[in-house]
Image (cartoon, rainbow, N blue to C red; front, top):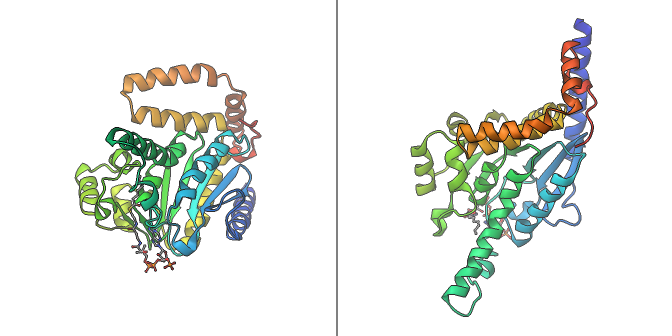
Length: 306
Ligand SMILES: CC/C=C\C=C\CC(=O)SCCNC(=O)CCNC(=O)[C@H](O)C(C)(C)COP(=O)(O)OP(=O)(O)OC[C@H]1O[C@@H](n2cnc3c(N)ncnc32)[C@H](O)[C@@H]1OP(=O)(O)O
């Protein structure tokens, strides 16, 4: 019995190590993208890496639309059960590309105030979609942050399902420093992530940096790792645990957790009952229950694609 446990642990360790090696071999953006590198480090796991390291992964115009295309593809991909987001280079991201905003946001087109405003509204909604697609994607998204995570970076990570960081990380709701109220998700999602409204207000109103330990104690991240390498290993292990489970159960869990966050308990239970009246009919329940009875780990069960 003991040797089986050791064998299982060793297999898992080898599997994670080779997956980590596969991830760190990313040479640059993956066609058709110019700011993202996409890979499959292990079965059913998609790795999305922000990849514009020379500009500290600043979010340029291409990034804002590539994220939408990328996550729409992931949503439709039956081979993907979980997504891991991380970043190449020195830091996670320096936020919106300050050279790019001049042409889009600061000079909106239109013949009069109404038309200029309408165009600006459309542009803001488009930028918002860049991170809302993460939340709309039914596959869980794990994000692994190293170094700085500034401005738009906080908008991005608050749309993810599980946040991890390395000890050298810091987070900054930077928008007030560049003269704007954050408008692509932080003000809406951060209060639902961090318990303390006072802390959210402080961070958003002063743009002060929050370091890894405070990010952990406040609940912004669930785990802090010693460095990026340890974090990527831990993130892959975590993604592997999710990918091993029934995609019907996992995706139903994500969708209903988000629904419940935004609705009353009564409405959430109602939605859940309607959801499971079809999803409970899956063969996955029988397969997973049988494996549990036989004391097999979820990884040994073959679930169909979803
Ligand atoms: C509708 C609106 C939607 C979204 C709004 C989002 C709001 C925000 O994101 S607000 C946050 C904006 N970002 C910032 O204010 C950060 C600016 N950058 C910095 O403060 C620093 O670069 C740093 C992150 C503290 C890192 O400093 P350092 O290590 O000294 O590196 P640098 O030499 O400064 O940068 C290297 C290289 O990257 C370029 N770069 C860095 N940040 C940005 C950026 N945000 N936009 C464009 N380019 C950036 C920098 O210019 C350097 O490029 P070179 O070509 O090497 O000069």
